[in-house]
Length: 116
Image (cartoon, rainbow, N blue to C red; front, side, top):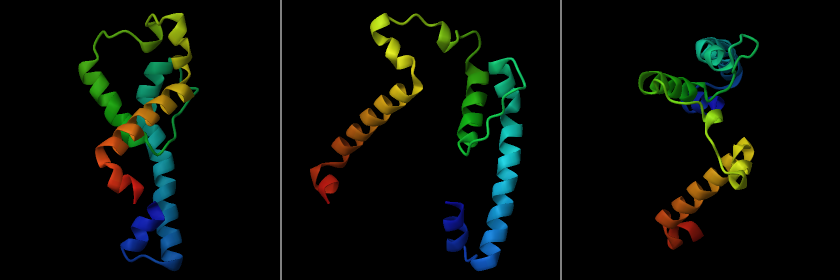
């Protein structure tokens, strides 16, 4: 994605690699550092750092949660019926969420657009 953005911006060849690697290197160091206070609060430890390119979204979520989430219980403390316990697995929960989202988008887009 970064290479595409830079190349559309007119950067090519050696400069594309150099500038892209500098931006990527900086992001890989800065993003975990920015998120570390929130990660520390959740894990009660400094043993874990979150290095991911979704960091901007995670930071925004953390700031919104900090502003409006006072006193709300942890998701791990919620009582879930045993029949729905499989939803605690993040892979299952994400897969179901994506499936619902994609089906909804296909329905909104319509048959003509979806088939083309």
